[in-house]
Length: 150
Image 1: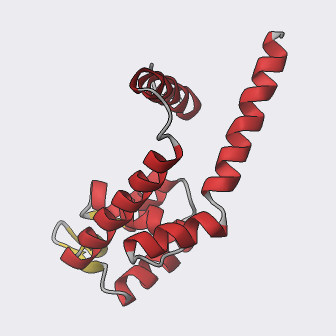
Image 2: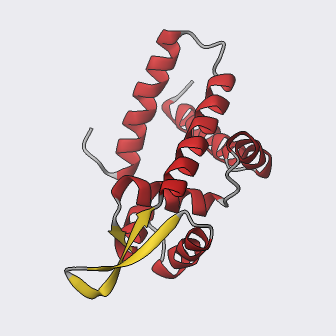
């Protein structure tokens, strides 16, 4: 096979993985396992606030590479669900800091655990060496795609 064929194969595989991973069926499965029923953007927003919070909406938007108006809608849903709080930024009273609540942290951990369980089930027949190689290559690909140094 040529390099072009391999590139096409990588692109096709990534597209299929993305389609399946973001499917309604996969989302329902993770929601059932975790007890966390959020849209994918809500999960990503909660995860970002969990990892980088307390954070301003603009920082969360930048991390997600989404428009602030889109993230604001998700934040409102998370606040209404009691998963995130909004408080005035002491350094700039015009700004709001987003923080994950204990309930939100628990929801994120349960969701993460369900996702890990789903992936472990998918890769159960892979050897430890194969799994390590996959992790190495995907981490390297992720860094290259995002423009990070490898």
